[in-house]
Image 1 (cartoon, rainbow, N blue to C red):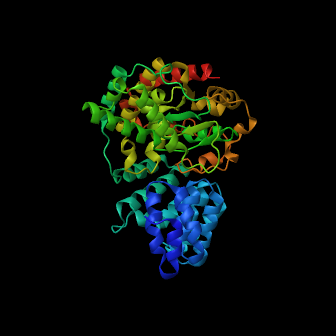
Image 2: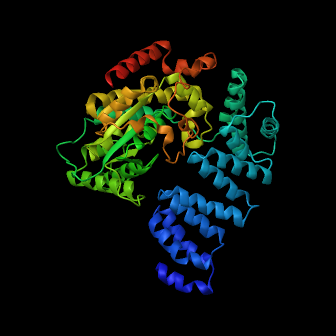
Length: 483
């Protein structure tokens, strides 16, 4: 591969395609700094190339400079005002940083260019739910019944219609739209895999290796926020990120990536391929290597010195707490505990892709919920105080006391700014993008009661009302103990 300077020297006789190949090689490896270095050296040769500006925007975005990234996308829409993709990117970016006014303008412009854009309509409906009698709602209904619409767009349109009916109080109709939307999502839920995963955890994982693998005193401390999707993990992330001593890597794949590398090494050396076979085989040196790789991958996107505490918020890392505790013995874990019917309903109402195939059916939502809590209860008995079960209900009703407890858990002093997570400027890429822009509130409590009849299959899959009542008792106990 040529150096960036050599590429720059070639440019007067070439096109941006010469540069784009090595730039994209870096982007595919998520090495954004070297990619940006090349782009900065050659940008003057292509001042109006939308592709170069878009690549630069990606780099700045992933390196944490959202303002510059958005400015570059604004340049793109000025250069190519009739290109829908630029307006879509601008809308998505501004929405994720909380600039709903700019997002609405961008998506409205996208809709002018492509009046039947399901993604634009769904985004605008997310910002402010349409009146069910409005022209835009009628357009969504027409699109949802169109035979020519692809399954992804049709699922998105049906989900948006469900949200419109939910806001109008027509809950049975809304539920039918959500159910139709879910039927169009790809992917299959592997119940047996999760059952085996938890069974192996209980049998093979005995606890962390605190004494065996000490962590360097100047190394960052990691705090993992885990739990079921839609349980409040994004809210806790934003609460912690208001603190000056905290940075977040968001819903990162770093921990699963390191675990995969670890398992491949064990398979190569010992011929073992089970998910937990690493437990009895890792040497102290290999644990250190895993920790080094984890830290490297976690910090590679920072352009500034990272804060002492790094938050990792991938909800289903709840199953990987044992591995994280083994390679990061000083790590802290926060498990978000939200009412299982509210979580189940929220997952059913959310337009996920195939990666969350469990959310397609109420019975599989219930199965995953049981598996998650079985894993949690096992970990609680094995890693003790490193794991905090955080009640969502307590967090939104007894906010200051619970936030003080959260900060204490991860080793941070009190800071009152954590009471206002809605004022943070962090990127939100999750389905909670609108909810977390509002002050902490109780609006999400007991939503399930509106859909109690429709949620009967979920109740059955959870083990009936006895299981739910036991959960409520445990949640109340952890709320009291976690202050």
